[in-house]
Length: 284
Ligand SMILES: Nc1ncnc2c1ncn2[C@@H]1O[C@H](COP(=O)(O)OP(=O)(O)OP(=O)(O)O)[C@@H](O)[C@H]1O
Ligand SMILES: [Mg+2]
Image (tube, rainbow, N blue to C red):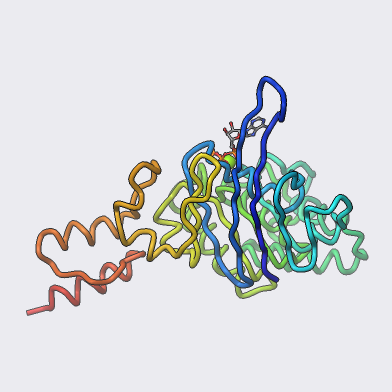
């Protein structure tokens, strides 16, 4: 199920005094099974782009085709679209509102009209998939949980309806390092389930380098790179003027190379950096 975005432009408050062009002629394709990272500085159009994917913002200029759903059509089957695409907004824990974790996670499947037995099973499976103990948390209030746990409950609520595409707007924002790692490992694990394609906005280049196999860079509403993390971070010059930085591991590898330690790999995560250093500086 690929996603084809062609010549997508979007203006907020068109023809008003507050008119703001948020996307300009953006075209790219997301293939089935990819983990796509979307990066760009504040206000570059990332959230505007992903909100088009579940028709929260309607296509006004250009086209988006997801599987066989053409989002530029006037009439689209929103229920079908939203069953395929799960969307986690930034700080999703603020959207938890039911009395118990179980009820919160059941909200989506109920809305999709599933039968009670199916909902019970889906809720339990989703809670377990996000790494929480179903019996321990099901009757708790979501507000009793820690920040990382709340976010996991929010993710369970999205995946309970088994979307094949999961869109995450800064899923690790505001979490401590352990919470961040838990969420990212969870996202990675979800790819072994019914979730096939992941689209993730992040301000953190380390996360993009480690977890994504495709990356796009938005700059003032325009798509300026559509490539792999390896390619994007291979050349520091590419990021000049974008307000973005290199991942830490890539930076360390570059500094070592400048000091004469010959590192020829891209070092997109800590393990590959350690391996590359071990190769370059063999044990005596
Ligand atoms: N509801 C809105 N009304 C008017 N302008 C908006 C609205 N939402 C966003 N914008 C403007 O559109 C542009 C793109 O915003 P968007 O939220 O898509 O950026 P972003 O890349 O997600 O930024 P951030 O990293 O801060 O989340 C910005 O200039 C923003 O001010
Ligand atoms: Mg945003």
